[in-house]
Amino acid sequence: MLWFLVLHIGTLLFWCAALLYLPLTIMGQTRQQLNLVDSPLAADGLPRFLFTHVATPPALAAIMTGTAVFLLDRNADGWLILKLTLVSGLVVCHALTGLLVLRAEAGQTRGLLIWCRISLTTQLLLMTGILWLVLAKPDVELPI
Image: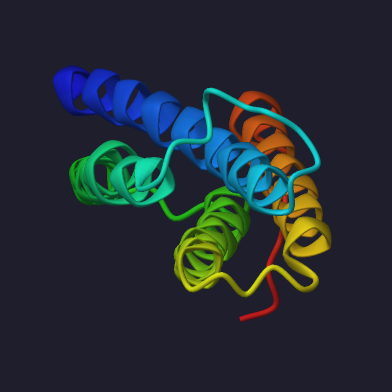
């Protein structure tokens, strides 16, 4: 089980890092399209590459290894259920970031910068909540 946990933590780190970098890349590309700034990092196609090749495979691997840890450990404490709820929110943010990538590629820049900021803030809050739940493991009783 330890190897699954190590793989889970490693892939989770890659997923979170890529997920945080994606909105920043989209913002850089959007600012470049709007001629607000010259950004060498905002090359065409970079957000899609990051989403499909850098963020999504670690996301799938983190979910699979986390499921393996859950099944092997047979733990269903309240904090874990809350953590899985926050992880579900992170998966939704991942999908919505993919929509932001599509909007940026289509040139629909209206409101894109604010949505990238909202996405980034939401992701940071979810990641902070997940980290706190994993480290603190509070005694949470769920009404079941």
